[in-house]
Length: 137
Image 1 (cartoon, rainbow, N blue to C red):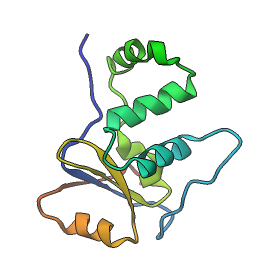
Image 2 (image 1 turned 30 degrees about the vertical axis):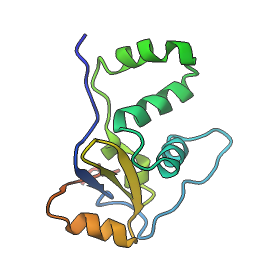
Image 3 (image 1 turned 90 degrees about the horizontal axis):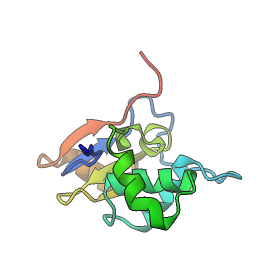
Image 4 (image 1 turned 60 degrees about the vertical axis):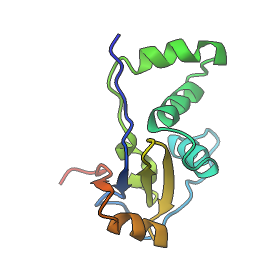
């Protein structure tokens, strides 16, 4: 079974062109955890510990109540089809966080107003790509 990946290497995902905020916002808590909450918690508490695939699958597993004992099989099935990468993350589309994938493909987030965000943006050794727009032009 062919496996697809959402991982990037040495790449910085900038906030979307149509991101509605000029300063980052922590996704608001709701009764049910949103994708934005799950991604924010996992990445902000564990910078450069997880790959994009890890984060995307863990959010899927949480939302679908997949037991620990079934995660590996479910992950293989999940990535047998292409999945949306972190360019579609609400963190970069709506909440003003850039997402950096290091040389090992592990991710961390940086607020758009931070010095680190600007440093990553201006680093010629890092590939840049923008988060997906929320609305079509």
